[in-house]
Image (cartoon, rainbow, N blue to C red; front, side, top):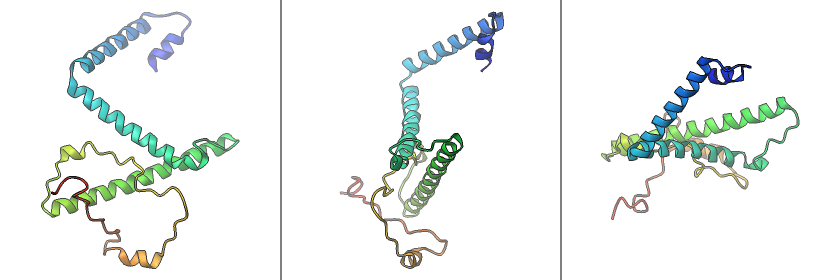
Length: 166
């Protein structure tokens, strides 16, 4: 932002020139580290993949409007965008909570679930969401299934499909 403000000035001053050079130097150092360190490249790729999974989730949630903001006025467009953000955050929070419950359940069964592996998991996916069709829910039957804390039961792991058992 500072470089942008200084660059927008009618005359280039020495501070703006120094900040531009510093930015070029930082970019060069980052690029050299990226090209020379495979572990750093993998770390960057993992973070990019997590960001892309959130973008994909937002696209999936926004699909009902064919991925477009349809409101004519800025205030309504902002409201539509905030609703999408709220919905995305709700899905991520729900998925994160159930991931943590599943990990606790697996660990209570004596399974080894390393934190290193968990750091690669992103809750921004939509595999557990039904986007199409009508969903009929028997509320009373669903309430009976809740445990004493008010949580839905976890589904048993499909270990054979995951290749974790013979």
